[in-house]
Length: 343
Picture 1 (spheres, rainbow, N blue to C red):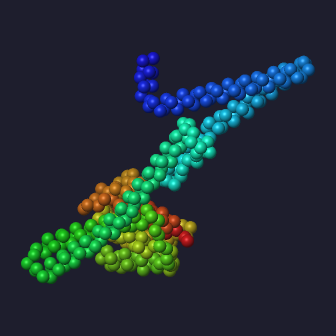
Picture 2: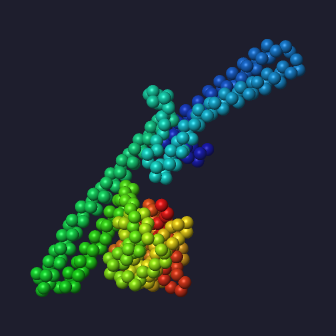
Picture 3: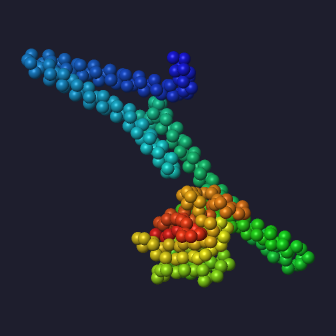
């Protein structure tokens, strides 16, 4: 008994109030239903001429009436709770615009436990939705504003090389690499904010030209491109798809010991696939499942990467009705790719 009392004391006071209030409502409801059914049975028994069928008929009608009344009472009590479960499940899945529908009884100013709980859930959902929207706007604004000082820093480094040849060139090269890495991170944050706001600008794109441009920007010869498709145009956002290819190439360079090839091929159900093969050790057992999770780095991690590259690749693929995958190649190396779904 002592342990049971101690367990009960850990419950908050409001939880006990709700529980006892629900018990009182159920007790009163079933009491009213029982009295009503008993009255109906007695009335029928008094009206019907006594016979061998009078008592069974009376009991049957009474039980049916009690079953109907108790069912109505139970439905009125549990219906808001069923809606509460549905709303909280949707909120947990990210559907932050979902709200509890307050009944006219609750809107009239009554303060039943279900009405109080529904209003609390709605207030919580509104606060969470507002905070996430503010965070997305802040991320987009800060990422955009950082581009200007980063551009100035690159200009200053180039100017220092030209006007001050006495400076240590290795130091200037290191400064430029750091600026480029910060600029890369800011670019990924901008892509992340665009995906958060669902800003996908679809237009016709030449997939081969897109792949060639991604290789050129990475300083890789176009001979690494392996084209296995005759598709001349796909519908997609060139900025987002270019970022996805850049992330795949960067992942092969940093974690895969260099790019072996960039393949463009047709996939299943009319999708177009982009795949990058590298020369690295491949993925460790079980690592392919978490490769596209945010803030995850591979075992060959170098530099200051936050592990956002492949996570963005998957999000960009999903935004284009596609998918992303990672697997080990036969022998050595890994193959990481994504697809653009049919439009």
